[in-house]
Image (cartoon, rainbow, N blue to C red; front, side):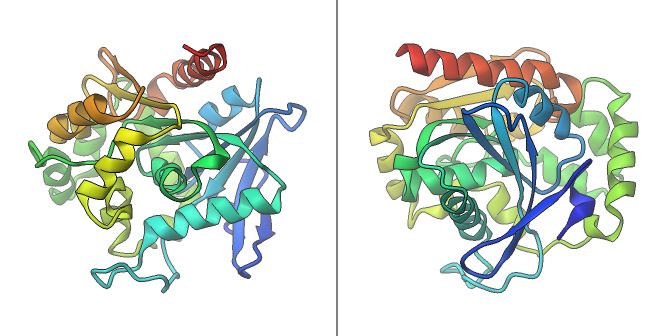
Length: 277
C-alpha cells in the first residue's frame, strides 16, 4: 500500500485482477458517491475534505510506476487505460452502480476512460483544467519551464497564493522517494485524454454524441490552459451539452489557491444536473 501518497488515513483493496489499490475515503455517512483520482492526496486533500461534507468521496491513488501492461499502439505503458480500468474495477468491487466523477488535470484521465468505455456508470463528470486536445498546441510554456529544472520558477507560475509553495515543498518531503518514481510515459497520457481513443476523429465523435453531463473549468491564468487554448475552446464547441467556465485570475494549482471554490463548483454543477439545467 502506498501510504505516503495519502495525507491521513490510507486504505487499500485488492482488485479482482490481483492489483492493490490505495485510496482515501471521506464523508462515509453520505449516500451520494464521488470518485476522484490523483497521483497522491496531499495538497489535493482539502478539496476531497470539502466534498466529503456533502458526499461520500473515494480518492483513488493513480499508479505512476511498476506497471508493464497494457501497452498502447505506440508501445508505451498505456497509463490512461490502467488508471481508468482501476477506477472501474474499484467501483464494481464496492458495489457502485453510478457515481459522480471529479478530476483535475491528470486526474481527469479515469473519467475520460469511463466516458469512452462505461458511460452508464457516470452521473456526471467534472473535467477541471483539462479537455481532450484535438487541435494543434498553441504554446509549450509548461514544458519549457519544467526543462529549466528550477521547480520554484514553475511553481511561481502555477499558483496565485505564494504561500502554497511551502505546502508543495512539504508535500514532496512527505512523499520521499515516491515523488521520484515516474514512468517516462506517465506525463504523455496524463496530459492527453484524447489518446484513449484510436484517433482524434473517434474522440470527437464521442464528444459530439455524449450523454454524460460534462463540466469543463479552467483558470484564466493557467499556463496549460493557454498552451492548449484552441483545443480547450474547441472542446467547448463540440462536447454535447457541456458546461464551460473560466475562473478569472486563477492559476493551475487551484487546489492550493481556492479549494473551497473548487468543491463548490462541483456541488453547484451536480445540483444543476439534478435540476435538469
